[in-house]
Amino acid sequence: MRLEELDSYFRSFLAIDALAGTDISLNGVQVENTADITCIAFAVDACMESFRRAREAGAQMVFVHHGLFWGHEQCVTGSHYQRLKFLMENNMALYAAHLPLDIHPELGNNVSLAAAAGLADLKPFGKFRGIDVGVKGTFKEPVTTEQVLARLGYSRAEMLACLSFGREKNLTGAVITGGGEHDVSDAIDEDVDLYITGDAAHVVYHTCLENRINMISAGHYRTEVYGVQNVAKKVSADLDLRTIFIDVPTGL
Image (cartoon, rainbow, N blue to C red; front, side, top):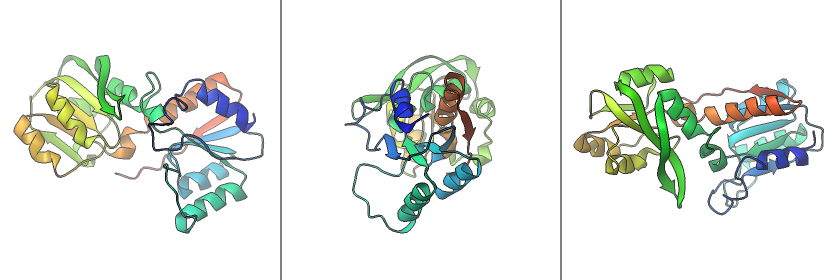
């Protein structure tokens, strides 16, 4: 397929145009190519490790959650230059989907992490610039935080933080993947038992303690692997293209 065809395809189910004035990421095609695309590599981050492994796999496009351009001018120097140079020298396109992938009601990071945690009856939770970004729901039966960690395949030692200041068994939960650590205040306001996010922050420790809420900060990367993998599966089902997922965990 040509890049233009794939751009139209992705825009058919990702709200790239609708979020153009909200998301600081420049979603969509960030670097174009001229070759026919027969293989797409999917990764969380636009980094050299992802690009090199994409080339080794024979991909002509890299689809990422975190792209190279974030709505402000950047000098094309240092690692930014090296990344762009690598893509262009290898005739490899780069496609980014940030908020459009976070908030997608079926493929998105938030609904996927919530489902993996065992949350049901999902409803919107938390806002970013007026846009619903996260989800909240209820557990089918009361569960401990350790049980939720086990469902997600996480160990407590791997977490950036796991604050057990609330109920021994959680009845409700809320999720904002990635950098949602400060949105724990919304979870407190809505009387949520367990809040799950990616990043951690020193300043929320006492907020959680004093408001008796449980909070898991599982890591930005770890909470945002779902969306790109879901899109890869959709592409494989819809199109005659090969897909691969490139896992480059940061531990953060």
